[in-house]
Amino acid sequence: MSQAAATSTVSTDPSRRARLAEFWYYFSENRGAVIGLVFFLFLVLLAVFAPWIAPHDPVAQYRDAVLVPPVWQEGGRAGYLLGTDAVGRDMLSRLIYGTRFSLFVGVIVTTLSLVGGIALGVIAGYFRGWVDTVIMRVMDIILAFPSLLLALVLVAVLGPGLVNAMIAIALVFQPHFVRLTRAAVMSEKTRDYVVAAKVAGAGHGRLMFKTILPNCMAPLIVQATLSFSSAILDAAALGFLGMGAQPPTPEWGTMLAEAREFISSHWWVVTLPGIAILITVLAINLMGDGLRDALDPKLKRS
Image (cartoon, rainbow, N blue to C red; front, side, top):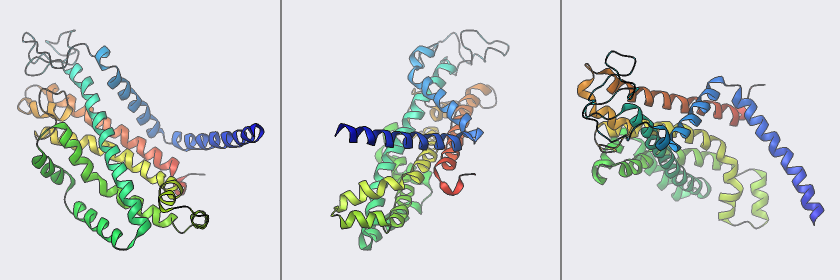
């Protein structure tokens, strides 16, 4: 028994290492994807260690330092490297803590939409018939509305707030995962290994989630990465419209909304949160391109 286990371990581990090496080879060929990954890891570190990195409390108001410019401009102070906002809160600290909220939104929204989309997509693609028709027509109705508009309507019904915004965005993103999963399941369902598992007596649940689903994950991982960045954008948009995170939460979209009146007089209050959103979304999208190159065999370069 121990010899068989050892043989299995020896035969499995090298192939797993080979697959990881192949994945990293194709991923690292995309320079932009590597840069995006490095920046994303930097954001994760910022979010985790925000209490130790941020120089100030993100909601603390310093009345003697209202609208102080960045340190490199005339009138800037060394204690506020990126300046302060209209009520004297440190911009750098708020941007660092804003990373936490943005990544949290991305993780929760992507997880909710991915799990729900996979469950519905597997059921629709496996059983077909009226079950497939009902599920896909509901998804078509959701897709008929502009995503941000539908999210805005859902938040208006549920009530403003970050939690409700995440639920609304997750519902809006779900059809993309449902359609991807359904198409992949329909393609895999007729393959020989599935037929063999069915002949061996595997039940519907085992066939759907243990036999078919693992072979459908590559496009879903890529879609999850792209949805991560879209979730950050939509959460920022809802925050800007006053329907997402509420003040004084240091969320980037909310920071933009609070700074609208200073757009022509104090540029840093508006520009810095906008740059944070831009760079974060760009980095995640670049990382998604690299994952697509590494996971899609049709795009693998020889």
